[in-house]
Image 1 (cartoon, rainbow, N blue to C red):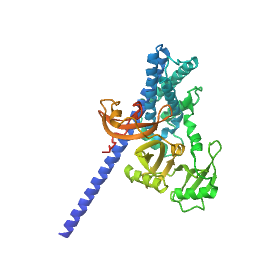
Image 2: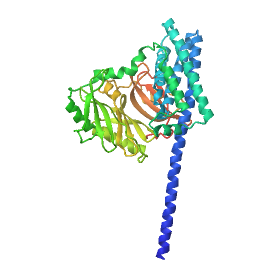
Image 3: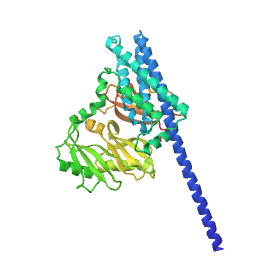
Image 4: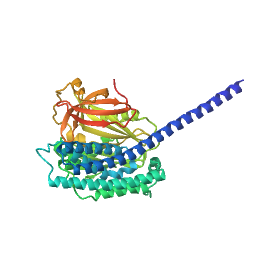
Length: 448
């Protein structure tokens, strides 16, 4: 009798294990399919948008109407923003696409600055028209190469997840026609003749200058920097910490600190400013194993890391997962206003939950600046400037940097149209629509 019961229990256990294993396999397969679909959609959307950018730039060259020129340039700005979002969805193997991303950013800035100006008072100059011609020609080159890559993708039935896995599994660069195609595009963009993009051209390097101007505190020596690094990383092994002055060319002086990570047989590297001893960035490039904790659990690990290092009043505003790494953006919350300019980004390994990446450039450049946080428009008044078809789900107040690189206080709305989720910033002083962003995450959870 007992033997029969034991056999029954063991059989049930085997069946239960089989069911659990099957369910786990199904969940992993669903994640792979979801990731593949995201990569495929982003690539084909980007190819389509590059076509649109080229068409719209070509149209501006033929326009003689000032009334049409501004809307057309506004459309270029909108499409370039969407194209940058597409690149942000690409697998990590395409990190070498940075020059193309920078080109799109600068093109968007150029288009916006010209779209918002009064062409009756300030018409296009000959130099600006030549710049448009150059940009049109350059976008045509990108369009041609993107179509070549798309043709290979469709012909070879490429799976992006396979390319990603192959590249991560070996030390040598993979001989892959798709990756080579993207390298060719980025090399061509890097070789483009210089275009005067205007004031926005300096934005990509402005953080360093702003950090230098905004740093506070007394200067620290090497030993103090070593102590701060050990405390920041919660490392008790100060004796083996290497330290040297950061490379030349920075607008501010900093120490580069290398801390051994004996547990993972690797090192953690970080920069600490000489003035004030502030952490600028940190990176541990250890290999991350199979995921064991959820993105939500990892966000709590990131929050605890910030609190331990005395970054107060920080609120999580965005989270994404790339392979087995969670990426989290936190901003300062002041008087219930999200200060998006004061942002810190952290990476958490989803196998063990340790923080392996930290970046605080915007935070150091902007923190503690005086800001006017008084609104002129109420939430209800701001909502009148929204698309009437938008079903508003969530509202916040936030300070963002607009396309003119000015900080503006905004009403931040999350809403839904059909199955798509949007984040929209309405200027809390003027009611102007500052930013409209289509959210990529279909599983966003709205707060009550």
